[in-house]
Length: 279
Image 1 (cartoon, one colour):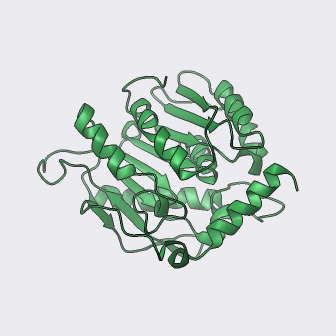
Image 2 (spheres, rainbow, N blue to C red):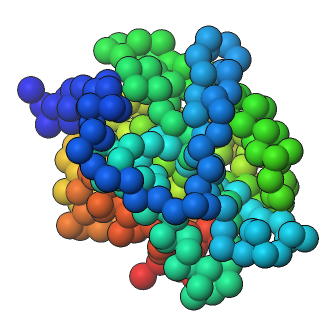
């Protein structure tokens, strides 16, 4: 079996594992500023999805303040060891540290993945092994259902300049697709270890994509992820045209796991919020 195919098989099996079985021995690792909301119906997909919302440190004490929002895919893996597959990203701890260091604060919304549906939901293109792509319906759900719901419920800055997408692996692929298909809604994104192998067509229109001024895109890949991950990330970065502001970082020792993405997150968020270029 080719290395890329082996990775695909491992990912598909992992995400299909029941969450209760994955997490049954791990303690919870979240604070009181994480809200787990009632499920939302996904139009066109006939499913429901849980949202996990992190509120920044000043949210309760500054009732007139409004905040940018980053929408993350694979919500189970972001905040809590007890719900993660293989460790959490530490999004809450990272954003708390960023707030303490820079004063920049943001709301983070985690959209749970669909388990056995993940490989289709996070791919707008059909795949010969995983089936018809459902990514366009998923992105419409994020843009037209999730975002308005969050804007109504919380004090957000709703404009595209203050709204971003973020994800890794298949989540990186759907983040890239979301920036292309819903650029009027999302003004930035963290495209981490994007699974471009699952959708070669994702690169086809990149050179023709028109980016609004101020768009910020952070592209990341690890050198030990296998397949063409790093080469595809470098190609994607080359194809992103100005006036989009894009950064590329390839970590030669980076692996395809949550620990690596957690380590990369501080630099990625700093770039997203205009606090500097990656080193």
